[in-house]
Length: 395
Ligand SMILES: [Zn+2]
Image (tube, rainbow, N blue to C red; front, side):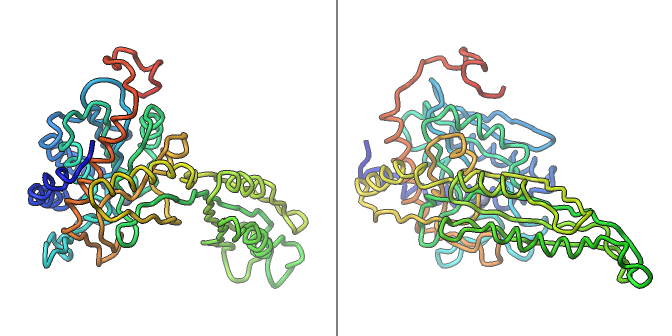
């Protein structure tokens, strides 16, 4: 049940949304610094506990701290997903302090995505009964989620919807498509020789790499939205030696899972051009695509919910960058991303959040969660007794 009252109720909460963002932004959390991430997890846990009324589980994987709240009774049905690490190194606050000026909030990681965490906490707090909601806040999204991926996938596969609190696209647009990512390294093994005395005895890894660069680039398919980009490359040891080894990095972005498979097969099928040289291709899919079919129903739902709240209909955007929403979509869970703050400048000096959009955004999120909980069946009142085998979730 949604209505304009939710908007009215959220407006007076704005000062505490802003102060929660301040608490989290002023605890710096660069992904690479495990101690900083652990300290940040402590702050996020304190902020979240105050709003949600219960403490999170602290899940530490390889020294990295993630937080999970499974709220109320019954099985988890709706996953709210965010991260508390940022790309900003320690000390960024001295150049980019937390400020709110003329309705614009600034500070490292405010837009991506500590404001999104505050929105999640306040949206859930506005629900009468949060039963069925899981809030998962991870600590390594900005480095590709190496220690949280399994947790995210397991948590999402038990839920009927994943709502990702990443920053919105331009003008507050929700992210309904994100490209999948594959990463490769192509190593070339040739043979060294003196470039002056007997170059004919060498097998030139630089020339082999040149052939491979063009072969790799040709795998792109613009019509399918597939980019295959040769990026860094190095070969050789000295300027007067035929290079014996070289290595090429390749960044692949796809809209469709079938394209990810096609490119993978082609990458694995690369063959050397020079006689006697050898290729070693490493890598593969890093994140599956979040395709439009994963988000379509949720986008339709949030559009209706916005109308019922009296808000402008949300817009949607397809983006090339990946997020943890790719993982939730990858396990087949309907996923809507970009539900976090409205603003701009992610990963950039002008990172900012528009304060006026915070309360309506929290109201929209609360209404969407409430709408989902109302239609999703509750599956058993005491789900934790069903055990890990039945739920498929890690302990
Ligand atoms: Zn992010």
